[in-house]
Picture 1 (spheres, rainbow, N blue to C red):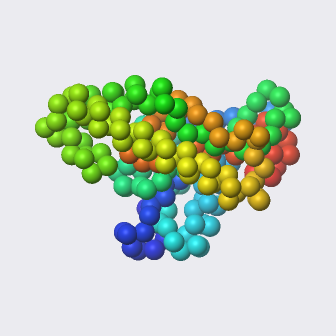
Picture 2: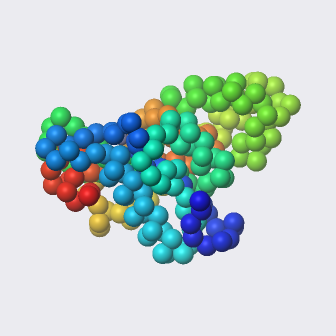
Length: 211
Ligand code: ZN
């Protein structure tokens, strides 16, 4: 379901509440609060704020407590032609004092492997970023996907900076708030994607604020 203005020219933001179903994510040892519930609450709160703003359309990958595999999460967003994909998680650490939010984007080394896999999987019949790969050779497909992914990674990194800048008055970030990681959920080659790791489930005051 798409929320917001009934206008397909408006950008579509897909928000992915991490974990769900039999996968609870991190759990606070004292309170029993589960990451999967916190992420769904945060995703819905962001959806409501964006819809109230009236400028973008919004969809969620899950609206209830269900399990989705990682490829399904960005797959749903790609099928909807999302302009931006935000996966919501809550961090956790053995050190119960660890605190602060982090934004992850895809690392370069990881993307090359995924680009190759995607090229094989899509069997040259996919359209990526307006480039129809049907009938292209495997090599050309790989190069086009690689170029698209590089551009997407740069857009994702720009969005990570923008998100931190705009959220900083409301959200306490870790000192090095932008990190690169090989996260499957961020591997859509043609859709800017970030993973927002909100505060720590393992930190008592963080989890209270998150809830
Ligand atoms: Zn998580």
